[in-house]
Image (cartoon, rainbow, N blue to C red; front, side, top):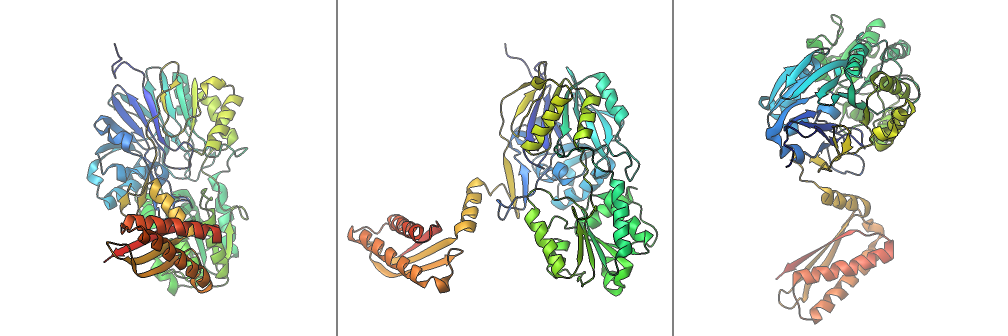
Length: 556
């Protein structure tokens, strides 16, 4: 007799965040109900031309939306909450999160028109809540955004503990350290399965305290003779606080630039997570009327996003800030893998404007929000889980974290290295289950999911070899050529220097079409096939390239 959903072991399904940085999402199934752990997005790589955002594949949860009890968000970064507005288009959910996470999420849901699809349940670290069969406890962790938390969920076999993104900062800017006592209490209860952040597993030692960035910023501001622009993540409230404090210490005002920056600052200030002195802030519109030495601009765009404030400054096209020789720009953030080219392009543009640029690794203007190897080992020793699953990172990060777990004594057979689409049955023993669909959903403008791998392949091919359009007018009955062929190329060869190549292509096209006409066929599909074959062979022989060839056969 098959087991009912009430009697079979809980199951954890990984829908994103394993084998990549971002798109963090998992589904915990127990007693026929589902608890979603985060719902994040990632940003496209250079191999995704035209793509704006990358979401998890929601098909698995969409098919089970009536079983979803709630979603719990560990913190407010886009790679953990950014996909939620898109998921809420298909279903209504109860959302458990801390005050700042909900405050940041509020505006996103309003913009997407789905705020009424979410029922907010604010939680405090150190408390316990119950949703259906899920009893959850929340523990504060230090990260590069306030109000991050680890989440513990009771299972029949023990506790499932999810670390969230964390580091063990002993001197955080807000004084709120990781709650090691609460996490140790989970260890006393018995952690059956531990899921832990792997992002910095390859980094030795411990991650420096966020508080070390403040003096570096203040020293730069003290030496600067003109305008200072600091680029950082809009959600990095602690970094923004240190920018404001450094500005105040050297007698400068601070102005905020960027839509997401204004939203984050407003939410954090309203809820007491950001403290700005009286008259410390000036509108960005006022900067042009101030002496450059009197102000610091805190801006978005530290990842080189094409239309961000910093990118526009580098191109001298920003509406509010026109950089001049002697200005200073600080990129106070890490480089997200895949963004290197864009970031270095912006840095080069800033130097071209005459600015002095400070960034990692040439200046200590940033520290990570993720635990390095020694902190990860400390956490493993504190928790002492029966089973361990590294999460949040590329495969190399997960594999390194798995090795750290073995080094501290967790048996190799109890360390599971899993990827997106894997499921794990959380009984005793913990074991792998069946794989599920867990690909990517691509967002291109207003289109969600209408660009798939086939379209991406075409875009890559167009970007790599270009396109050749062949326009021919032919008799509908006989196939006789009445006009053309006219050959137009984009992104393949330069017309002015390739006239002989294009003329020979025209001759090859005519020869191919005459061959078809002799057979007495006027079928456009046959004509197109012959043109495509003839030109494809010729262009490869002549250039060793394979452009996309598009025959346009007009019948009369």
